[in-house]
Length: 587
Image (cartoon, rainbow, N blue to C red):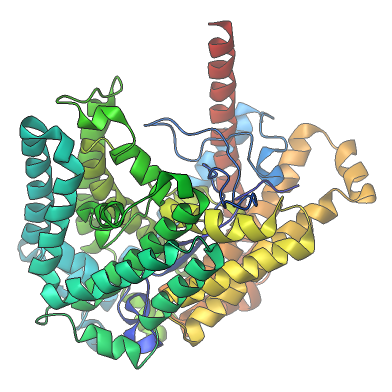
């Protein structure tokens, strides 16, 4: 059966009440990305004894993202240690490398040929003029972060680090207060005092309700509070609390407001679950106004944040002790984030992957290989964008002795819906308070269906209800449940006997075929929100209908090669984990 927390929606910034307000629809902002298996299941909650989640082993700082644990789903775990011949794997690597190079060449030529088109003028601007290259600037958030707002972001985060260090030297017992005060000042300086008062109103209301000790009442009020930031006329009224106007105002408004509500709900539910701990309003404010997480996440559930900032004695020491090698990992993460930023900047000077989908007439001229590469590269870019954002934020959080949610797993390594994710923080939140609470053991079809529908309903509210979000939610909800149905079917007597008659290597090959088809279902379902429904329909028609069977089979074979290489990586990690556990047992 499926393990607890095997899937949860992974969304970064929420949208608003309708499509034309939604950041991820309007201009390539953060949007729905899929779902994931929970790596760290939360501890039992609710004071009435009903478990919200179950505990699985905590990952260590710096552990390999995506490493297999006992909670891996059957699709991933079955046959994970089965090796294939080295020659076969080498052939897969050669085919995949050649296909990516061929598709990349087609995209490069398409970008060069379309640079002077009228439809490209708005989003392809002058870049490196000395070599005659223009730059794709279709993603306004990325451009704003690393041009006009770059210095502000660096100044704000650097100030946070410096003040934290100063407070550690002068009054280490006040570190958590310093985080909150600095965060409040940053919010006031960016969004204005009235916006701060608005958020404080929501915080106080949820704190007061948490005193009742009724989880259902806290969750109901929290969702109502979230809806007030998504539906007119309340959203229009509350947006008027922001002082001034600037390019990222809408993104910061929705990010700060949405994450504030989620943090308040987490605080309220944990207060109900542990009334003996007597959490105070000050604890909520310290939790909510921690600046690195405030606008863009990732979100940490209150119990984890409280334990790491207030409940652990070492954070109040003059010189907190770090695990061995922690500083080296922090430096490596910072360098990796910088390299990724430079790499994306270079990439956008040669490949206009965000602009081409907006010109359907031109995109229709692309060869099938380039079109498949364009769809795939759009998802990869959104993963890189999430990885860079969380990489920068997590670097600061680790300097503060926190263990934030790990960066997202690479989209290339995802071939099951149960692991598709871009935000582990929201995954943990939804899994703990919604999905596991309803889904139980996640082995029965009906409870699982109810759990996914309820979780996607909250996800739809988080993004901002509109037609494209409804479609995305329905597609991904179907994909997740269909995956469970297939798993149930796979253990059915006749099919189980057929697989048992195959060798382990052949079983792995058969499963990789289904993984390849699943990969493109994930791509198509999420391409709806990343680009447009029209572009997704065109890609589907070209690859599945007009291109059948030649293009369809070619794309599936290349994807099959990639899935096999991912499986080989998972096999290596599983063996390393086994060796590590054996060594610990001997010690």
